[in-house]
Length: 175
Length: 125
Image 1 (cartoon, rainbow over the protein chains, first blue to last red):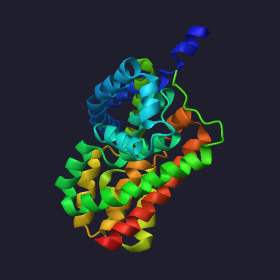
Image 2 (cartoon, helix red, strand yellow; image 1 turned 180 degrees about the horizontal axis):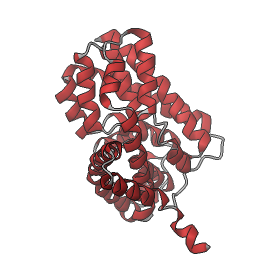
Image 3 (cartoon, rainbow over the protein chains, first blue to last red; image 1 turned 135 degrees about the horizontal axis):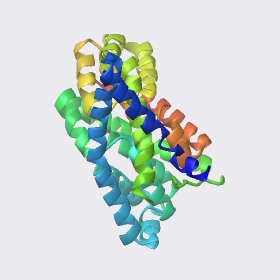
Image 4 (tube, rainbow over the protein chains, first blue to last red; image 1 turned 120 degrees about the vertical axis):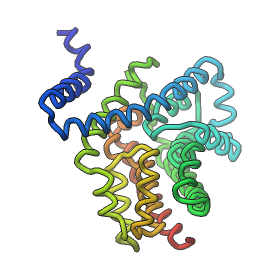
């Protein structure tokens, strides 16, 4: 029974693999399309996951808690905001890729405000994405969108902190 | 923090997205949002952007197509922002990290921020 539980978390992957194999076997068109979608997203994922692990790993091992606390902790001020935004800009991948990094920063003592500013910057200011945005939508659009979003997600950071300050806020590790 | 623990939920999300995108492919999104302007357009863009989850390298071509199809910059900015910041499909994963309440508030605040952003971008451009 315990072994069954251990494998339970793989159930969706197993079902998906079966679905794809059957789809190709009986020439089920929607199944093939879904598989094509999956492949595209999977390619995106394997481009950001290694970098994510390098960042999480480096922080875990090399950056002491006191440093993080000092630079992006409770009393870090504007410099702390700038640092988390820069950190976010250097990354790639979708927002859920930032959650493990957020957990790491939280564990090392980043302030609530900076955590949510980090998530905001991650979702809209990543340099690789800005490059694509300029290519497809033009420099003017990109510049205006970026400059307007900046104060907005900083405000979200302040609001989250104001709301969560005296609550029992924590980020869980996914096991 | 093990590789497996992080990668597994990601792959589950990928499966979910792949199936969802079959039912809501990009050309339907373009059909739905192309030519949309005004506050109504912004609202629809925010809703569609929140429930869908499209990787960046696909979403930018879609955005460019939307502009060509006549959608206003305000609508496109709102759509892109909610795509990136608000995740209904990733909510279960986010809730595992932050807890349901915090995940909900973060998404709600970012949804509002995206609508404000759309209005301001539309006003400037």
